[in-house]
Amino acid sequence: MAHRRRRRLAALLTAAALVAAACGDGGEHTSGPSRAASAAQATAPPRTVSTTIAATTSVPPRPAGELPDVGAEVTIPPGEGNFPAVVLVHGGGWVGGGPSLMSGLAAHLGDEGFLTVNARYRLAASRSPGFPHALHDVACAVRYAAAHPRSNGSVALIGFSAGAHLGAVVALTGDRYGEGCPVAGSGIPDRFVGLAGPYDVSRLGIAAVPFFGGGPQTNPDAWLAGNPQLLTGANPGLASLLLHAERDGIVDASYTADFAGALAESGSEVLVEVVEGARHSDLQDPELVGDLIVTWLER
Image (tube, rainbow, N blue to C red; front, side, top):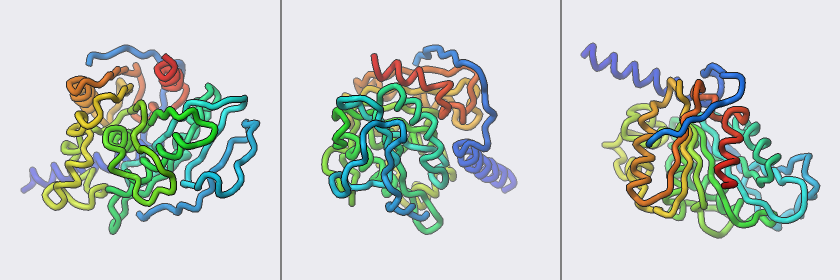
């Protein structure tokens, strides 16, 4: 009995750490330039948040009604022409956080010529699980990015921590989601970038219960449909970059290694990079991962 209590306490502490670190207040920041080494492998937030355009853009806001608002924060690079689009999905343990956590990375990518869609999704709460609502919202953001008049139609989906889990599900099976989205199209992006994601939810135990609204025995179909580790065969044409912090401390590196292995077995193109000296929350820091992501997206 005491052993079971200790295990339950450890799981609860892990869940709390996931939320704290992903929200940016639980991780130790690593300063200085990054060095990367290739490794083998709630309540629903209101959708009335206005889509915004960064002050740096030379493009005026579109007239109301031309493209439905999906509650995202949009940055359009200055200049002429259409731009490759990037959708960003924040972390927060599925129960917290918001687009502001990815605003630094969004700004970095915008400066590099990407149209960024910093997505908002419905968070899990005591009487409202995140599944499948959060996935509907992320898939809708992908549709929006592809349909945006200043997008060239290509979309890369970037997620951090719990957002990497959501992004991975959508990258593999996004056409199953998007219910209620006012934008038509496919919810599957062209490419996926995962930052310190817990991809195999079957290993998370109680930490994933708020997202699914119960344990795997209570809602087995949701746990299967929401487990990227088991979905890699659904989209073998996906190209993925998976980054993991060398000193993560929250999400074990085996999650990334195992997911990369499953992607490769399915025939997908996948690259894994370990960010030396970084901790979990550092992987949303553009100073550490921005150039790595841009280099991969522009290759």
